[in-house]
Length: 216
Image (cartoon, rainbow, N blue to C red; front, side, top):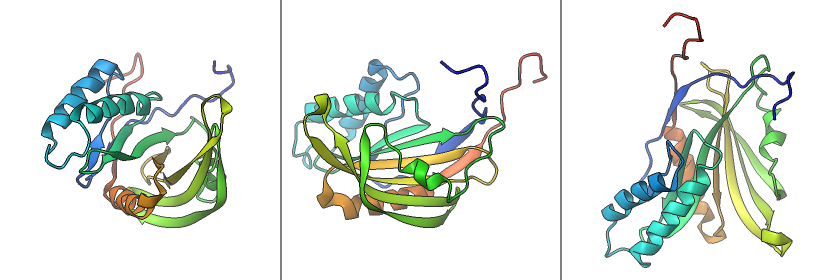
């Protein structure tokens, strides 16, 4: 529950779009229901080339439904996943926005330790940090390995991630794009695909909804 003196979240609405390369599937759900995820997965799977698949269509369908529901659990601005031609999901991509009323947006250096924070995992090794100029605004890119605890605390698994903190010039919110994957063998390819995707990202501020009692 939010404390009475906590600042209210920023009321900034915006449109986020990508020009995804083939293989990326937009899994954003408006209602967040499993029924919606099944409808989306049905449409996507029906377009797949069965000759290129190395796994059953039903397995791709089940993965896509579960992945869509999981990725939309925290109601991101956008959720997507990259699937190989063989039908295997290789990476997840999520876009979120952060900001509170009356609280200045963190700067490029201030945001770095925030990007390295994970709930049930720890960054291992030295992260690779670069500063970018994207169409959506200046950005900080962090790539690193992540060591996550497995269910029930038995063992750990390694995941790799890239986070992009984007500072749109016409907004107060901080936009964060997170890409994660587990197969280290595809790191170079996924990093390339992620970088290509964020270069096409466009953030378009939309008119805010009028407050109650205000004029339309």
